[in-house]
Structures are given as C-alpha cells and as structure tokens.
Image (tube, rainbow, N blue to C red; front, top):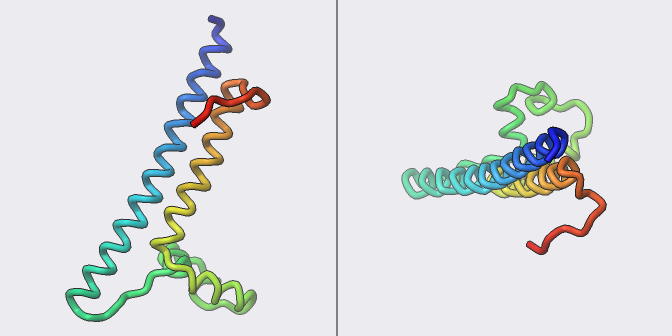
Length: 115
C-alpha cells in the first residue's frame, strides 16, 4: 500500500469521524435544548422559546439583534425552533462530511456500499 493510499484512507476515516460527530452533536444538542425548555416550562409554567435568531443573538450578530433589512427572513428564522434546527444541521453536516470522506478515499465515482 502506497503512502498516498494510506493518506486517502486516513482522510476518509477522519471525514467519517467528523460526519458522525456532527450528526451526534446535532441530535444531542437539539434533544438537550428541548429537555431544558420542557424543564423550565414544568418548573415555572412559561415556555422559553429559542429560535435560530436566539442563537445568532447569542453570537452577537448585529443583524439578529436589530434587523433593518431582510425583515421577512429574520421573522422566518425567528419562527424556526432551535431544537429542530440543530438536528437538521447535524444531518446536513453528516451528509457533507460523508460525501467528502468518500471523495477523499478516491471512491467518489464508484458505487458505494449499501448503508
């Protein structure tokens, strides 16, 4: 086995590790946030909504704090619950990292094994 082949296999394993990590982090993050929201609701009787805009405000993006443009898009992102967006992001990252791992291994054009 050549050095190039070893590097390709290592890159594929790293890509798959990143893919699985992104998937697990997205699902676990969404579940943890939902459990936190349910806990607060059961304890004080008030649902504390968290959306994608909540995350962007936490990151201190000026547009998320006071939008002057793209108001409808801001409202749309404020409507999407973060506990649903995190697993979706995890799945999308999983798909991207997985495709990258297959490409890194040099099997991009070949048939892939069944999942």
